[in-house]
Image 1: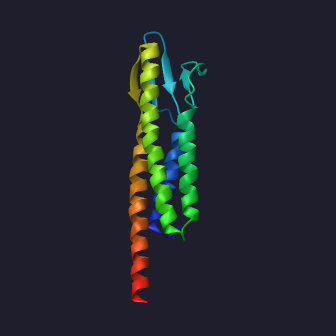
Image 2: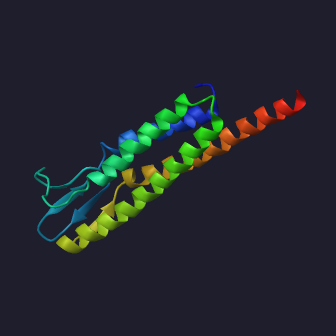
Image 3: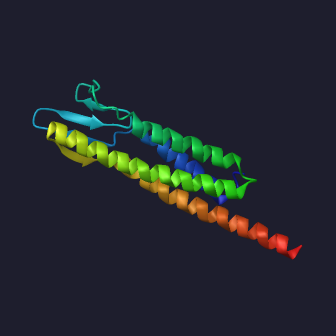
Length: 152
């Protein structure tokens, strides 16, 4: 299970999305205050959460991506199911960016602030690339198994 390259891709993807939960996704700078944009909240400089911003959606998408990638590791005998789950995982990662951009524009307009993304904002993109590589590797495994069946 772990000796396959797609397992390494899926573990790296899960690790990136877990790390995303602990790093800020960006910083909003307004005239009077600075706000940190994280996966589960928008915090002001004093560390208090701002009410009225349910940004938990990004955290839920991250956790769901981690759980799906780890679940995909357990399905090593069912390669087509692995591919389907990886495609769904890719859709979740793409929707992460849609929600991320929506929240950036909402918070930016509410506080009339400038936004500076951090390195953590690129982690879902790297995870999406790893997901595509895992899909390709699983597809190669499936093609190899199918060729062995033709030989028999």
